[in-house]
Each structure stands twice: as C-alpha cells, then as structure tokens.
Amino acid sequence: MDTRPIGIFDSGMGGVSLLRDARLLLPHENFIFYGDNKNAPYGDRSEEEILSLTSSAADFLLEHGVKALVLACNTATSASINILRQKLAVPVVSIEPAIKPACEKAGEGRVFMLATAATTRLARYRALLARMPDPSRVINIGISGMVARVERGITEAGAFDDILDAYLEPYFGETADAIVLGCTHYVFAGGAIREYFLRRMKGGCVLFDGNRATARQLGRVLERNGLVNPFGSGSVTFTTSGNAPELRPVFEKLLNMPID
Image (cartoon, rainbow, N blue to C red; front, side, top):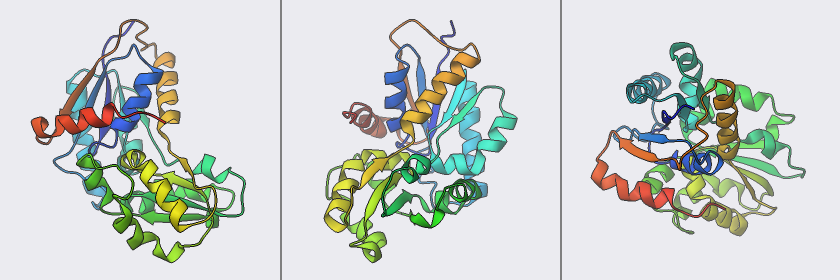
C-alpha cells in the first residue's frame, strides 16, 4: 500500500477535468493538484518557455512527495514529456489529443481538432497526426481566448461564440463527424462547443477528449510499479502559483461539475 499522493499538473484549471475522471477510476488515491495559474495560458508561449515552466512545476510536486506525476495539459505534454521521463525518478503519465478514436469514427465529414496554438504546432502532435489513416481529414484549429474564460469558471452555452466565430467561420456548413477537445480546459466547455457546432455545421459533431484514457493509463502505471493505494476514501489538495483564495472557489466549482 502506497498512500503518497499523485501529482496532477496543468498550466491552469483545465487539468481539473482529468482529476475528476481520475478520482472516479481511482477512488482510494490521494491527489495533489498544481495549477500554474500565474503563468497561464501556456498556449501562446514558446516551446522553451513551456518546458521551463513544466519542469519547475514537476519539481514543486516532487518536493510534496508525489509517487507519480500526471501532465494534464496537452501543451505541456507536447513540449516536455520526453525530457521529464528521462529526468524524473517517478512515473510520468501524460495526456494527448484524442484524434485516434476521433479518426476511427466512420463518416465522410471532417474531424475538427480544437487546441491551443502551441499544441497544434509542436512536433509531438504533428507526429501523432501523421500516423492517422487520413491526416487531411483533420482540421487543426489553434484557439486563443477560451482558456482565460474557463479559468474564470465560465462554461455555459453561448459563452464562447465570439471566439469560435473568429476561428471557425470559414468552415460553416461543413460536415463535422467529430470534435477533438485537445485542451483539458475545453472539456468544461464541451457542451457549449458541441451546441455551437450543431448550429453552424452538419454532421454528428461527436466530442472526444483524452481524459478517461489517461486516467486508465494512470491506473495501469500504478499497478505496474506497485504504487496502488487500495484503501481509504482519497483526498484532493489544491495548490497554485496564483492567488489561492481567489482561485479555490473556481477549482471547487469545476471539480464538482457533473460528468457526462
């Protein structure tokens, strides 16, 4: 039995969506969440900046005695996962955009991959995209502005229409078989995003994200390394580089939102 906490890191609050799934799958585990809200968002930063900030966050969580680290940020994963796995003495699990299951969905329409600008341009994602059966089916949309709204706890339908219009207007009327939420922040806005697509486009507009697959992988890694905590009710500790009293209510709101 290993009661040490699992560290979950995100550039802000988006990783809370993965934390929710991890708690459901691993109810006995203790978690410490760290959001680098002071430096968010990462999506418009350079690869070198993202790597430096992610490494500092990993060091912070290791100082708090975590037994495993989860990168709950697609942008941080793209920039730093290989280096962190070489550097750290604990297992590192990371999320990646769920374009594989999205591309496996039958249909003649397009797969829209919504992420931060950094995620769509970094080499790790481009390599993942190249392995798809038909990369040309995927439309990559690097979006700025949505993360900041989710960080304020804004998630309702219609709240992102102006931002989405700015990026998606050229595709109005297209058939959207699938929508990949390639940023963990966007999971909280998933309902609003799908509702927007259904108004502007044709097709099933089915949502995909990598959270549950990542939570399942975390469970396998814990078992493989003898790190499972099989007893207890589990706990969550919130930490941030930002203003904790101001951000804690947002964290608690997002953590307790219903999961579809």
